Length: 123
Image (cartoon, rainbow, N blue to C red; front, side, top):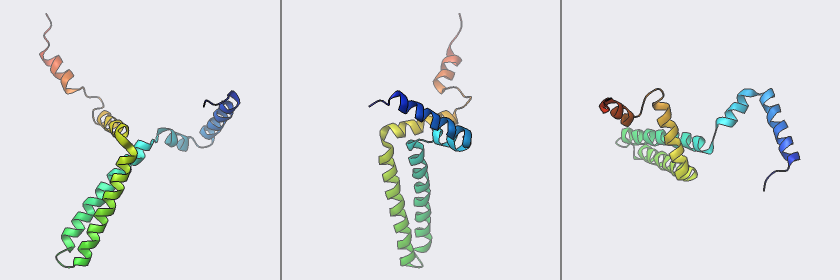
């Protein structure tokens, strides 16, 4: 259901006042997406999983209870990871990978474009 003109005007005024009062917060809110938020949590849960694995390997020989604590950390990290991947869905994963690809290739050409240019001979 679309907003009425009056509601759109009020929303626009609220947005403008937010930009005037706290431009940094407004920029953060505008640039943050559900995909980025969930992707960030996936990265942190992956790091927690690796840390739990390392803790389990280092402590399991000396104490089974400490090794089990590492397993619990790994399990919780895997649950957080699965939850956030489910939240992102296929579209979010594609969006995240596209943004990571664009960030890593800033100023670089695609390999296939390089190959085309390299083997394309002017006549």
